[in-house]
Length: 496
Image (tube, rainbow, N blue to C red; front, side):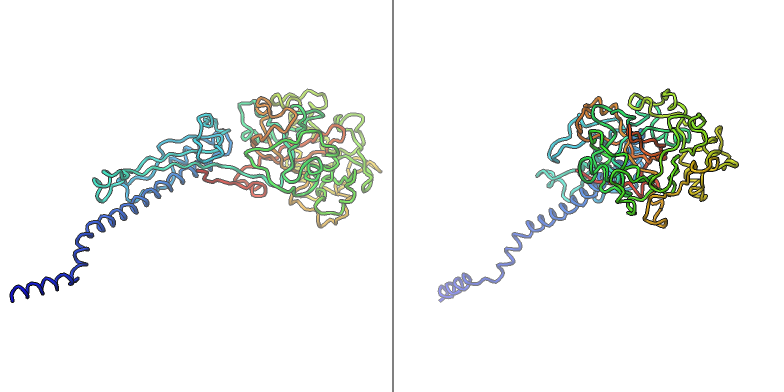
C-alpha cells in the first residue's frame, strides 16, 4: 500500500509544472541584470561620446568661422578655440570643459571622407587656411562595473575628431577680376582699403590694352551662362545672376568683344545693339552720368580728352569728366607690384579744376587739392545735393553737359541707387601666385582663390579702344559689413 502511494506521488510530481518559472527566473536573473547594466553603461557611454563629439564640432565650427583668408585668421581661430563657451561632458570622469588636444589648419580635403588627410594639406599660412581639424582631448569613462567591462574590451574613454570649413559665395558680382595691388607688399589689401589715400588712387581694373598672363584680360567665367555673351549680359544688367565661391573662381580667357558697350549702359550709352534695352529698368543708367560729353539724348559724344590734364589747351572751355591721376598723363605710375605696375595712380587728381569747371563757387566740405576727396565722394555729393542735372557752369552753348541721363526711356522714377549703377563688385586675386602655379597660361587654369571681393566706382565710361575700366576702390566687401549683406553669403559647416 505504501509502495502504491509512493508511485502515485511520483507520477503526480512528474506532471506537476508549478514553480517552473521561478526556477527559470532564478537561473536567468543574473544574466538579465548584467545585460541591463550593460545597456545602462552603453547608454551612459553613448551620451558621453555624444557630448565629446559635440564639443569637438563646436570647437571646429568656432575656429572655421574665422578662416576668412586674412593675415590674422589663424590667430583669431586659435582665440576662438580658447574662449569657446563651456561644454561639459556628461558621465565622464572629469568635470572640466571639452578642449582641443590638437589642431591642424588645412588648405583642402580629400574627395572621400574615408581618405586620411595628407600632410601636404596642412598649412600655417592664414591666407590659405580654409578648413580646421580639431581632435578633442579624450574624456575618461567610468563603467558601473568597470572591471568586467574593461576585461571584455569595453571603452575607458571617449574621443572625437571634427573637421569644419569656411566658405562664402558672392552674388550679383560682375565677371571681372583685378590683381591684388598689395600682393607683393607687407601691407595687406585689408589694411590698405581702410586708408582714404588708397581709396583716392585711380585704378585700371582691367589690364590696359594687354593681358595678365597669356590670354587673360580681366574677365571671370560668368556665374550664370557661358562664353562672351554671358559675360556681356552680366556686365550690363543691374543684378548679375548666379554666385561665385570665395574658395575659387575660374578665368574667362580672351578679350571679350563689345564688353565696353555692355558696361557703358551704366553711363546712359546704348550702343551696338543695346538700343533695345534703353527702356528696360534692368539696364538703367546711374542717376549721375556726368562724363564730359556734349549733345542731346543718345547723340551725346565725348567732348574732352581724358588722356590730357583738364588744364591742357585741348580741354579748355569743355565740360570735364572726373580727371585721372597726374601720373597717367605721363605714364609714370609706379604704385603696386608686378601685376599692377603702371595701373594704379597716386590719388592726386585735380579736384579744384573739375569743381570750378563743373559747378563753380566755393568748394564743399573743405575739399581742395590739398584736402582731396575721392571721386566717389564727389559723385555722391552731386547726387545727394541735387547737382547731377546742373549744366556745366564754366562752358557755354553746346559745350555744356548735364549729369542727368537723357537717352534712357524707362522713366526718372526708376533711376535708383539700389544698386548704384556706377559701382560694381569684382574679385581680387593674387595674380603672381596664380602665374607661378601655372593657372594663367592661356586656359582657365582651374579655380583660383579669391583674396577678397571689392566694390569699385567707375570714374568714366569703359574705353572701347583698349578696354580699360577706370575706377576707384570704394571698399572691400567683407563679412559683417552692410555691403556684405547684399553680396556675400557666408557658410560655415562640418565636413567630417
